[in-house]
Length: 235
Image 1 (cartoon, helix red, strand yellow):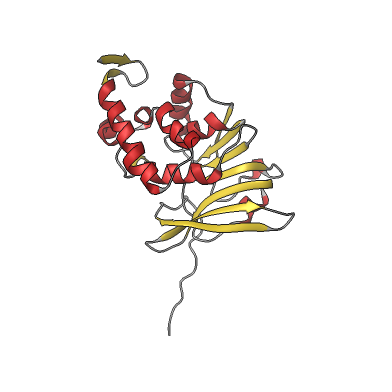
Image 2: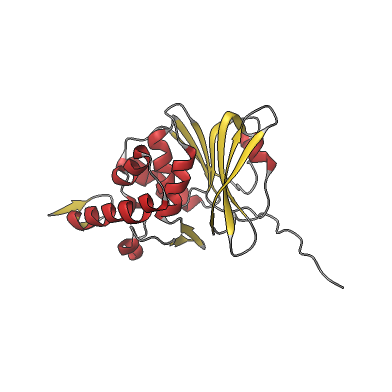
């Protein structure tokens, strides 16, 4: 069956996408240990192919990063699934996303939470994502902001969130994000400078107490503009 998608702007073979989507869920996401049904349902309900640049659309369900412009990439489905599953989003969650990118993860967050604030340095990303989100519908309110997010933006100082997601890596931990967690809030970030980095889930368990768990090894591009850590030099 062929249908015409006003969102994508060209005829789409719906049976092909659906078969590829189910294969992605079974062989990549579920195989990586993502078992929550509400997480798996996101990959059925949110059309990932609508967030992929047209020239890479055949890779929409491949387990790889996809270039989206400005030297940035869409995270692989496996990493997206692991991130969403670890955060265990709830209907009342106030969510902050640093690095809007393609907007796919933003849409997933807005399917499960109460409200999403998403921040990106690139105004054209925000413009494109806003249109994509309007086309798919069924999302919680989203506050789109064009700001530098390598540190908690000044405009968000004093606000707290139940969930914070960083879609780019940090060389070193940044306390500003931890401090922006509400009690019981969860933060997902990838840390490290080498070829192998670590994904962390950090939960605020007290006024100044955090439970920091390393989930898995991965590799994400660093958030733009963060200062690189000094390297040791031997005389």
